[in-house]
Each structure stands twice: as structure tokens, then as C-alpha cells.
Amino acid sequence: MTQTCKKCLVEKPIDDYQFHRVSGKYYQTCRRCRQLQSYEWNKNNRDKKNAADKKWRDANPEKLWWKRNPEEHRIRSAKAGAEWIIRNPEYHHNHYLQNQTKYVAARARRRAAQENATPTWLTAIHKAQIQEMYDISLARNTQTGVKHHVDHILPIMGKSVSGMHVPWNLQVITAKENLSKGWRF
Image (cartoon, rainbow, N blue to C red; front, side, top):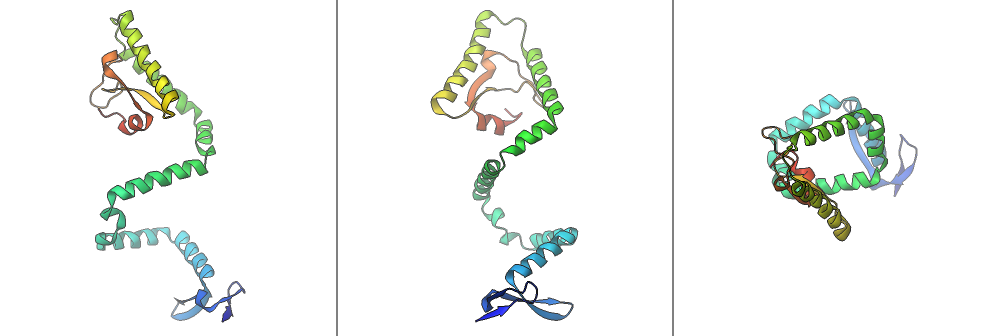
């Protein structure tokens, strides 16, 4: 059994229709038209929607899936983020092009901090050991196919404490570990 939607004028099965109330009257529209109406209302009334959602979340914390399953939520979020990056490969390049001066300034700050954190009393052996860490990182990238970074155990641009650019403050770890570590030690 089919029926024609009065809004989009498309004939659809009866079970594809929903009743909804507008100003005290009930209307019957197809599910797609109702979704579009809902989307438009949410877009035009974002503050009301956010306030209602927050009120519901505060009243029903036990019903929030991500609160009950924080580890699985973290895994799903990371997976969704990685998939988004794959679907939008041009985003980072475009962001870099639009903010190139900020990236250049950040690199310059980092380079200056590393130069200031490198003591003048390092011997040639120490400098060779530092270079060896970078060689190991490159070798691990090639051998495993996983990106590796040379990490400062005590960060040279730390918030509370700053380390030095010396061989005993360096370690080779995966890029994922290093980037998630940030300025912590």
C-alpha cells in the first residue's frame, strides 16, 4: 500500500510516513521530508536545541553511551578522526597554505629553543650520539613502515620544566606516542 507525500509529491510505502504535530494539528509526511524539516529547525534554532540537549544530558547521565564506555568511545573517536583525514586529504594542505606564516614562525621558535637548549660544552662524541638517534629514527621508519620521532624525555619547550638537547635526554619512539605525549614527561 502506498501514499503520496503532500510535501514532496512522491509516492512511498505507507510505513515510510510519520505523523507530527505542528501548532496543534497533525500532519503526515514522508520520513525524508520530516528529516529535512527537523534539520532546518535545528539549524535555525541551534541555541534552543543545544540548551534542550544539555538539559537532557544533565538529567540522564546514565543513558549516555560514551560515559558508560569511555575506552570504546576513545577508540571509535580516534578511528572516526583517522577516517575523516583520509576522506579530506586536502584539508591540512589548505590549512597550511592559509596559515603559512604561523607554521613558519612556530618552526623558527622550535629551532631557536633547540639551539638554546643545546649546551656549548657538548663534545664531538655527544654530537655524534645525537646524530645517531636521528639515524636510528630514520632506520626504524624504513624497517617498520611506522613513523618514528626523536623525543626529548624532558621537553625543551616544557611548561613547567625544560630539558636540554643532549644525548641522555633523547629517545626514539613512534610518532603517535610522541605527538600524544605533547609537553609532558
